[in-house]
Length: 100
Image 1 (cartoon, rainbow, N blue to C red):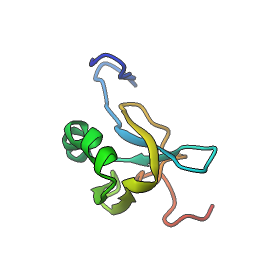
Image 2: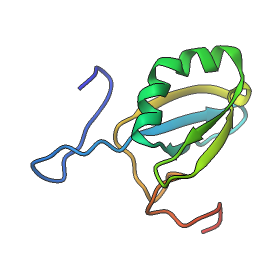
Image 3: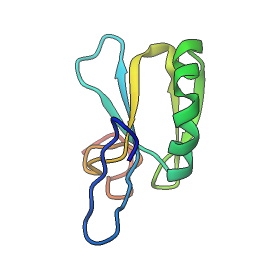
Image 4: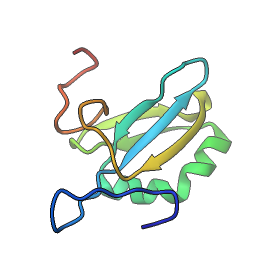
């Protein structure tokens, strides 16, 4: 486990469920985005640069979709290996769209 990153286990095998947590400028609550494993791995090396440049990127989500993030509006962001699918955009267990 990398320092500062958590893992959970539902049994003998550890299942990583990566998420990007965005703290947007002017909002009180963070946005959780369920990422595809390969996207999270790639984003781990690029996140600081994206925050610094403020560019927009399409990211692959865990449900096979894509989500656009404009990093110019992100105050801070981090990756987590544990997420709640009920609250993460792009999670396979979440309903489609932004409604309830």
